[in-house]
Amino acid sequence: MQALPHHYQVVATVESAAAGSTNDVSLSSKGLETIISAPPAEFGGPGDKWSPESLLVAAIADCFVLSFRAVASASGLTWLALRCEVEGVLAREDRVTRFTGFTVNARLTVGPDIDEAQVLRILEKAEHSCLVTNSLSGTTELKATVVRA
Image (cartoon, rainbow, N blue to C red; front, top):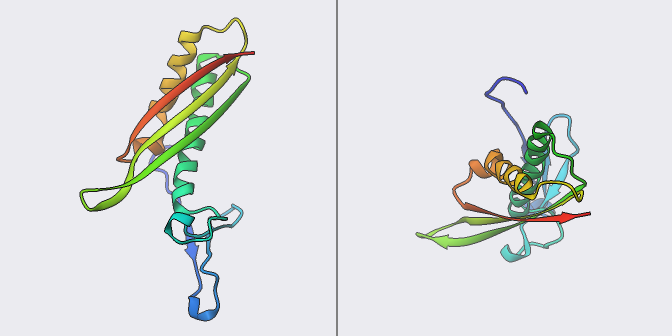
């Protein structure tokens, strides 16, 4: 890992609706493919593109999986597959609309001889290590399931 602090830059561009734009937002970052976003259906958008809300929740799922891989590797854990599904709750509290909580549903498949207590500790450590959830004010709840292959 490089020394901190790290800096990340994303550029968002959109054309005026008066110019005939679809109001899609183009998101780009050096060295990465451009992605298109739009408001979600809940905010009157088309619902067929990534939105800021879905990108935030995706960042949590991605960060959890990458954190788990790092912790599992450092712990010498042998595992077969991980599925991480995250649900974010957007609500209005104190006259502010914000994400109030996130549920991380992690389903880890391991071999028959793996110690389940160790696996659960590693999953919890991955959840506590996720820099994205650590940067957000909403609460995070981990619901872990261990499946033996």
